[in-house]
Image (cartoon, rainbow, N blue to C red; front, side, top):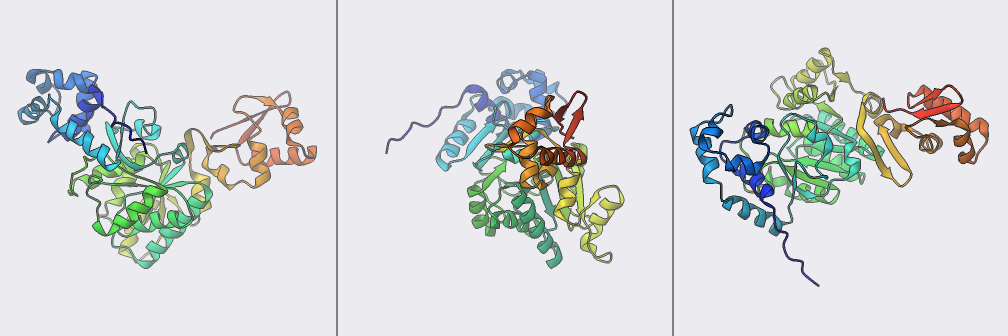
Length: 377
C-alpha cells in the first residue's frame, strides 16, 4: 500500500499551535492577542513592549511568547498529532464548527479524533453530576437515546455519571455523539473511559482544545464547558447540586444564547437542587424528548441530513413521512403552492391538508397569490 508523505504545516498553523502551547495563555488571552495583532505569526513577531500593552500579558508570559518564536514545540506537537491520527482544525478553516466560531473566546485550534459532520450542527448537550443517582443515569440514557434516534447529535464531556450515560445512550441506538475532553487526547480522563472514548470515535468524535499531553488539571473542566455549550443548540442539565460544575455549562449556554433545559428530580433530593433552581429561574422543564425538540431554536443554517432531507429547526425531526416529504419540496424563498401539488404525485387534498399541518407547526408560511415559503423559526 502506498504511503503518503506527512502533511507539512504552514507558518500560521505552527504559530497558533505554539500559542496554544505557551504556558500562562488560556483561551481568553489567546483571543486578546489574536485580536490585537491579527494573526498568530504577528503575535510572535511582536516585540516584548508591544506584547505587554495587551491586557493580561505580563513580563513572564511575554518572555514565554518570545522564547517560542522558532516554533520548536509546535513542530513536535504537529508531528505527534500526525503519528497518532489526531486531526487539527484551526479557527479559520472551513470545517471549523460554525456554531463554535460564533461564541466568545472560541478555541484557536481543535484536536479531533473521529469526524465532525454537517449534521452535528443539530446537537444537544447533556451534562450533570458525576456522583449521580440511578434515576439520573437512567433518564440521561433514555433522553440521549431518543434524541439520537431522532437525528440529534449528543454532546457531553466523557465524565463519570451523567456524561457517560448520555454518550452510551446515543451509541447504543447507532446515533452520533461528541465528547469534549478537558485534558489532551493523549490523556483520556477518566482512564476507565478509554474503551468508551474508542467507541465514540467510531460514531462521532473526541474533541479538545488542550495539547496532546496536557493532564486533567482542575481548571480545565470549567473552561471545557463553554465548548460543550458552544457546539449545542441547547443544553440539558440532568441532576446537578447547587455546587455542580454542570451549572457552569448552563451559564455558558445562557451567555451564548443557547436554550437551557433541566430535568426535575425529587423535591427533597440534593442531587437535583441545581436543576430545580434553573427551572425556577426560567429554564425549560423537560419531561420527554418532544419537550426538547419543540423548544429548540433554529440551527445557524439549514442542515442536510440525507439526500432529500434538510432540517432548519429541530422540531422538523418529529414529522411523519408525508409531512417530511412535502416540507422538503418547499424552498426558503417563496414558491407556488401549485408547483408543490404538481410535484407531490398525490391527491391535491392530501397535499393541501399537509400544508395546513406544517403551517400550524410553524414550519411554513402561506403568502398572498397562492405562494408558500419555508421558515426557520
